Length: 441
View 1 (cartoon, one colour):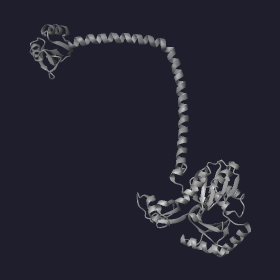
View 2 (cartoon, rainbow, N blue to C red; view 1 turned 90 degrees about the vertical axis):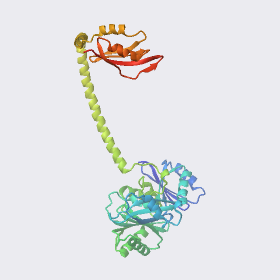
View 3 (cartoon, rainbow, N blue to C red; view 1 turned 90 degrees about the horizontal axis):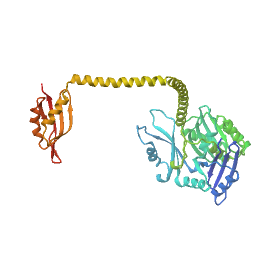
View 4 (cartoon, one colour; view 1 turned 180 degrees about the horizontal axis):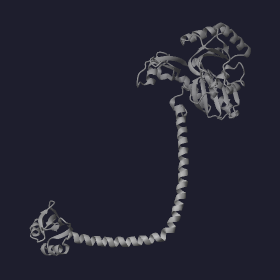
């Protein structure tokens, strides 16, 4: 396991719970110092806590947590809709607000419900400044009590529960459906009767009749047991110890019984890498693959491994086949060379025979025509090319007067229908021509 550090921030106090690679818990509190960042750095170095990032948690009173309803619209910008609606719920300007949200269960036909957490920008900056002064980086910044569900087992049955956690003279109330957070409050109570009244008030806001379970944590053992007994009698619902997972219960047992702040720090240290409500600016958040990306990467890895294995097997088979083919080629190479030489000789003779047959079939009077053109063409004309086929002859060249060549070719005993096939152009003092003439029938 990689080392992890959770830091619970309350006014000028920092409560730290750190897990090393062997899952040993280090617990410390920094309070009443002029430079808490430097003190935190010194404590982490002295205890050899090497985690580069800290999971930060704000006290519940430093944040506003609100469940809001939004109209269902197709293609709408949900972030802008939440920001627009959030102005009615926060006491500070929106540009000085840091917020995040997570969807809440709802009906398909009903409004869209989201749980929003918001804090003042300077509160967030103060927490980030503490981490920077300690020479570390933030992994996440959440409301500390929202990390408590990280201590629950993953296979927690679905059900409505209220978790009341006592620390520093206050009580954080969490409304949970299974391990999923639905709402949170912080109240100040002096006894179990007042706590029972606040629990009723909280569940009525969530439109519950009564929860399936009430969990109470924080405080001295005997006192908490008395509170649980009184809550059970008042609410007619069993008030129990939170059902910690095996690992979380073992880690929590190393903390003092009455240290509610330490349990919050431990929950932050065990929280998942990407909490659902994170107040860190997007630029400061560490990159972490989502579950979908991990599944896709795993499938791609399996496909790549299967393809690589198949490719290697195919290469081995091909190499063995090529070795056999190479050996056979070497054996037949002398015979193949003799056959190739014979084939080349036969091909040359065949081309010669084909040329003779073509000349005989075409019956193109090449030499007589050349002799006649030499005698007929004027001295100022010269040919660039002469093409002959079954249809006739085409002459390309230059002369002082290209048009005078047409009647000369018409007067030939072997040619007729002489004509210029392209416009005459003048180049270097001569006319460039192209003349086509057919054979005399």
